[in-house]
Length: 279
Picture 1 (cartoon, rainbow, N blue to C red):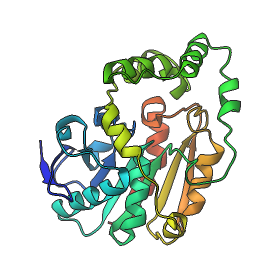
Picture 2 (cartoon, rainbow, N blue to C red):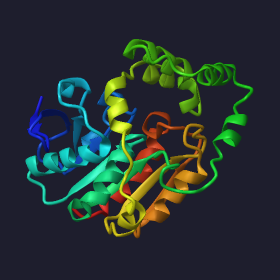
Picture 3 (cartoon, one colour):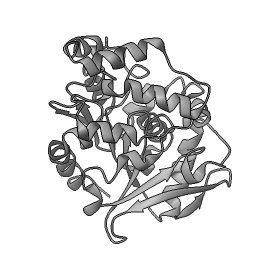
């Protein structure tokens, strides 16, 4: 597995999917602190691009690295960019990973070529009432969704990574528009690190974060699932307005994992954006 040095000299690791000669994309997993294997090759995106997927601090092969917050890990992302020999990088981030991508955009806007934010949590960025409850209500007749809602209301067991993973699996149906064999298999393969998640989510951003994002001139695509009961839809749409060159793609019949639930529609949204973005 390829390795690089973090901002503090820590040994960090990343996966590479795709041909060495293909254009690189740095891909940030969510969770927070989920093992990035749940991303797969993003519905075949690795056939066209070289996906560089870091194992964030405390996760996978970077499990022994000192834990830091997403704000500090923005420096790790820039260290990875430099290790790849890139003057600017394109970031593709999912869910909680978009928090790290936003931190990077705020700290290193001149090093960002393009930005793709997949189903980003938005309550820390925009003051738009969430419609997640309305989206969830439309699924109330689904027994699996009702069971997942009940588990979510009980709250997580934070006693161990295994106990937390069991709770997350019990609530997993909330994250998908359909709870079928494909989505169940995907949900069952996700692994988490509680300690890394706590560190990742710690700390407040800079007071001028929104002003910094308004100064990010890299083209930005926000991908939303129309039935995403995790983030809602309305707040996610508003995230694109924070960026001068932000745009939105809404994928129908889709929850929080568009490349799993609607791979063709996901590629139809992402491919033209990446093809037209600078390197």
